[in-house]
Length: 381
Image 1 (cartoon, rainbow, N blue to C red):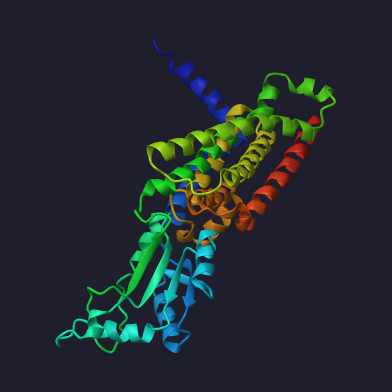
Image 2 (image 1 turned 180 degrees about the vertical axis):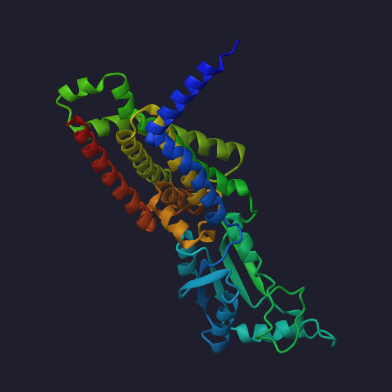
C-alpha cells in the first residue's frame, strides 16, 4: 500500500531542497521566461532594414530619388556608398553589407524604356531592348536575406514613372552570390559547426572544476604548485583537439554528403575555429567556477546555449532582430563565429578582413581566462 504520508514527506523534502538551491530555482524561472522573450520578440522572419550599399554610376538626381524610393520600403537600409563594383563585392564578402544596389549610368534611359514597355502602340526598338533599371548583388548564402531582396525585384516605381509599366519587365535584376541555387543546407552546415561547438565545448569545461570538487581532487590541486591560470589552460587544451575533430567531421560530411563547398583556405578556417573554441572553453570554465555541482553547470550551459542558437544568426537572420536582441547577440561568441566561418567557408574571406569579430573573440577569451583564474583563486581562499 502507498503511504500518502511518506509521499508527502518526500515531496516536502524535495520542495525545501529546491527552494534552498537558488541556482536551480532561478533556472526553473529564467529558462521558460527567456525562451518566451526570444521567440516572442527577438525571432522575426519578417526581415526589415537589411544593411545594404549602393554603387551609383549615374550620380544624378534620378538615381538619388531611386535610392530613396527603395529605402522607403523599409526592407533595406542604405548604410554605405561604393565607388566601383569590386569594392562593393568585397564589402559583401566581408559581411559589411548584405547586398549592393548598382545603378547604371544610363538609368534615365532605362527608366524611359521601362515605362514605355507594354503600351498599346507596336513595340519599338527601344521597347524591345528594355532592361531592368538597376541590379542587386546579394549575399545568397542566407536564403531569408536573399528572399527579402528578391521581393523588391518587381517593386513598382509609380513615383518615377509617368506611364504605367509592363509588370512582366522586372524593375531590378537580382544576382545571387555564393549560393545561386538557394540551397538552405549551404547556410546551415557552417552554422551547425558553431552550434555544436558551443554545446560541446561549454558542456565539457563547465563541469571541469565542479567535477574536481565533487571527486575530492580540489584539495590535492590546492597543495600543488600549479597556478590558477596554469590550471585553467591545462583544462582547456585537450578539448581544443576535440573541437577540431568535430569541425572536420561536420564540414567533411557537409562537403561529401550535401555538396556544401569549402571555398576558403583551410588555414583561415582553422584560425577562426581556434578562436571560437578558445572563447567557448573559457566561457565553460567561468561557468564551472560559479556552479556548485554538475547539475547547475549543465543548467547554466543550457541557459547559454539557447540564446546562442536563436540569436547568433544560425536559424534567423541577425538583421531581423530588434536592436535589444542584437546587443545581446553581440555578447555571444557564437554570433561572431557564425560570421567568421560563413565568411571563410562560403565567401573565401580572410579572417583579418573581419577584424571586429576576430578581436572580439580574442578579447573574450583573455577576459574569461582572467575571470575564471581569479574566481578559482578566490575559491582557494
